[in-house]
Length: 340
Image 1: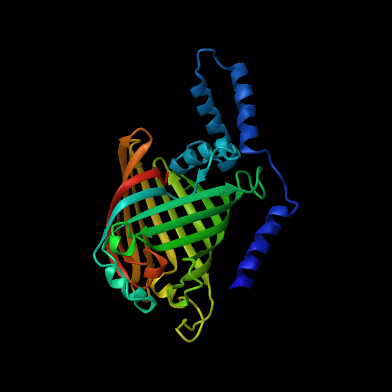
Image 2 (image 1 turned 180 degrees about the vertical axis):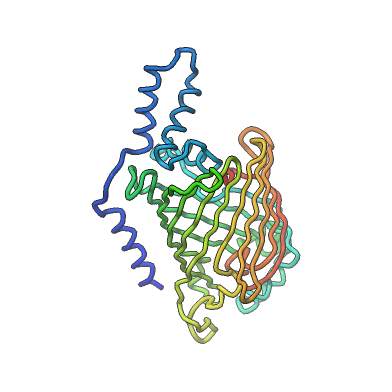
């Protein structure tokens, strides 16, 4: 696995350092448009109207369509502050669920690690923190494209299991590199983009082989937007560590059968409604085994910038330790950032 990760790092380092064509950055083009627009427009126009005009012009230049959708609006906001050292750009959703109720905690996974698994409760807390860092300033191969590094942490916390001193039951770490580019395909007058990436995900328990879970994937994602609707289709290829599973006597692969439960693709649809509510549905599937999962989410206004968030999950792989364990849960909490 070390050699695989080393090769992946080398590939993306080469992409960054290669001598590739360079285009002006989003910030440069946007500022130039502002200066030119201010000089010619009616003085009664507000700065907001001028900025809106320039956003559409830059969008038209980069993706060939000035009709921005939910993803484009987020992209424009992110690129305005992408290289501000005081701004952290979110990647996936960031949320905290103080209450997560499951229909049955996976105690079986911990039985060989001690006699404490029966103490685990079906009520716990969960949070996800996810950020991304742009590695390129201007475009590389195509107008509007960028190379990113992203990092996501998901954690399941037995906050109410006082008999075990409220331990963190499972934490998953997911670093990834990906290349994003708009494409000139506009079905139904929407916008499209592609994302090519490589990621590693593990629960960081290499020192405890029977609890260790990890996998490496390369993927391609097709992104589509129209107005407040966004769609993401992401098939992946798993870089195998072998077909033998780790036992108490033999150190081998953490989870060689993970594709049987986690599937080979993920489909996500999100819709932003009335500026205050966002609905999302994620599903993944392995048609050969009929295993997979579905996750429903909704955000709603609370106060200020904070939004409430409710999540429902049913299927395999809510966490890596549960990759081969089917369960359903419902949680309620706070969303720090939305999908769109």
